[in-house]
Length: 323
Ligand SMILES: O=C(O)CCC(=O)C(=O)O
Image (cartoon, rainbow, N blue to C red; front, top):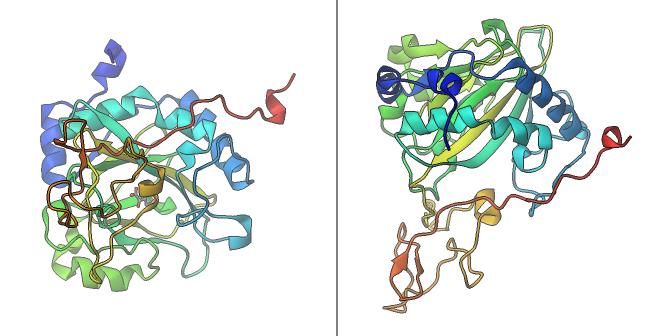
């Protein structure tokens, strides 16, 4: 896609890309116009009220806050596949263009998204997002270069609990098991996962409306209590670079790893999902972990890109759409 000169000016340059590669994050200037954010902000309200513009192919197994869950952190996944306002934001050209620059990739695809809203807390505690890495949840992905655009839907000063990064942690070891998004004891996690010696590497990413912050999939990150006077609402748009492929991954118990994307993504020409262990064409034995492939028409191994199946028909009309 050809970008306008205005968009081109907002893209990270070589110095910014080098910063991202070294530190694991990149904060944009104001890149999303106010009208784009203002249009998107209606999306969460529709979504939380149970309205859906498109239905997902699966109905459980992922974050999906409902009013009966109460006044806690609201974590709703795959909202861009279900809600037109959030999809419009996620499809804004500049997001993919920035992600493409940062990963030096000519192709960026949607992977997942999380609408995260933290209610304000006046008391001693309050909901937080536990220190974690995104890649720890994405074990069926081959790419080491997946990334997330964190997009608050309003000004997000420090007191509202924006995302916090541990500078450079994407280069560290042992981040594969940090599946602790839901852990509520930030301090205990910090002692265990970050350590006293790395405390000074924490970066609190306060943003103005229209700014975004991108982080590497192995980056350790979380967020603290919202001490503001209104909900802190953001979209974490998880993105995959062009080379990402599905792979078989077995957990500690030897069971195949499974995430919702495995159900939402394209199947092969025979209707088989590549996550299913099946005999290799040559040996009749199960394929080795990490080698899940399908055969092309000639029998040559062919990798299958992860590609979400998005409904293409127009969204359902809402009462406010009718004259
Ligand atoms: O919204 C937050 O506080 C955390 C979001 C997050 O985990 C992410 O952007 O990957």
